[in-house]
Image 1 (tube, rainbow, N blue to C red):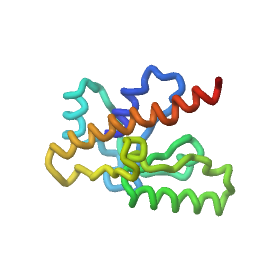
Image 2 (cartoon, rainbow, N blue to C red):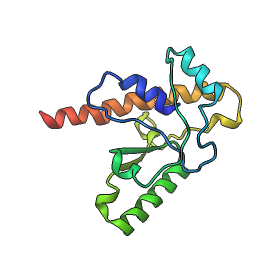
Image 3 (tube, rainbow, N blue to C red):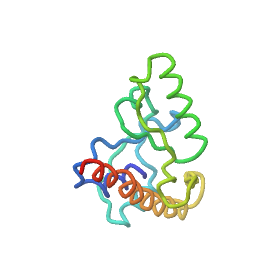
Length: 150
């Protein structure tokens, strides 16, 4: 869902390049988004989101400027993976900023509670969080880039 919301909110923004999502585990690799994700996205006017689940790759830490975790456990796993890549291949192999996405939502340390095992309302809450986090990212990161270029 985070990818779908982020793409929708930044689609006309030339400062944003490739947007992708991946999990720290290969639990649903190759599967489409949960139907509850799709229905919440569609209810909010976000049509045609297409994605297949995949596991995070070492190259993601080089290919993306930001790797955003949904919760502290994933942040820990991603940070550990990045440190291992840097140790084995050098800092140039993993320069991405690994951060908690919720830090952009106005509540430092806010985590997304995985709605997968709960009721549909969890997906609505996650959608609200993704919208708020993306707005914060735009304000805190993209607008900071604009100010730095002036």
